[in-house]
Image 1: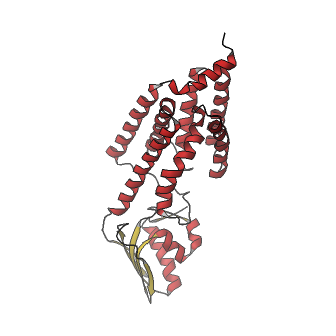
Image 2: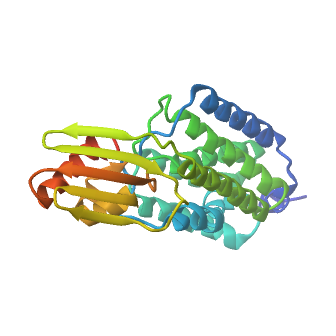
Image 3: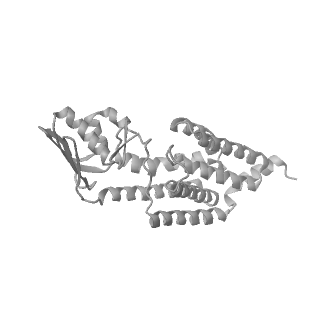
Length: 303
């Protein structure tokens, strides 16, 4: 007769043979509906006011981290419990609270983390399949909330992106159960690579419309510049005119006043611009008018 302890070990050991096809079916269906919703209603991601203020390298934060680093860490952190590897399970238990500490306190995320922990140990003790199902669902929700801004809410703007991350959590769980965690990491990296390419294309194929902002004592003209057009940039104040070529707002704020990076969120991170400002009153006034003009046209948003 198989004892309770052996039965639990048996369930964990043969966990990869549990098909759980409802994960891939429901995950794929929800992912398709969420993407279709974004396309039909042209929903764009809301501005993340909590985005880091300091400038970071585009290729590092868009390609290297999401494609090569994040898939490994996140699969272990959010779905390491689905493997029968004790080292990966131990890392899962360690990385989960560590991630909360590093990302900042969030009561709801903490609640989900406690639920994941509790369900994991209950499943390890009882070995019931339905407990594992609940654990996978809660873990997918935990994974999806981790990918949203701390300011996110259950509104029309945020729900589709929550649904996409949640559906990916279900699909990745199915891959671990039926293939291996390495397959999940590969799929995760491929998905992030696709997103990175879409971001790069959105920065490259931009409208060349000229925008004009006029105020008391200043006139600003700006237009977007294709991201890959040139690596040569310039910031040239001369008299009552400031000419900026092929620069993003992170770099511009870094020149004008680096402390402003903590005061404003940038509506189009990494977008490059060509800017011409005519301003009276000297360079110090010119810098103030530049920020005022960029804020009035919603390129900068006060945190």
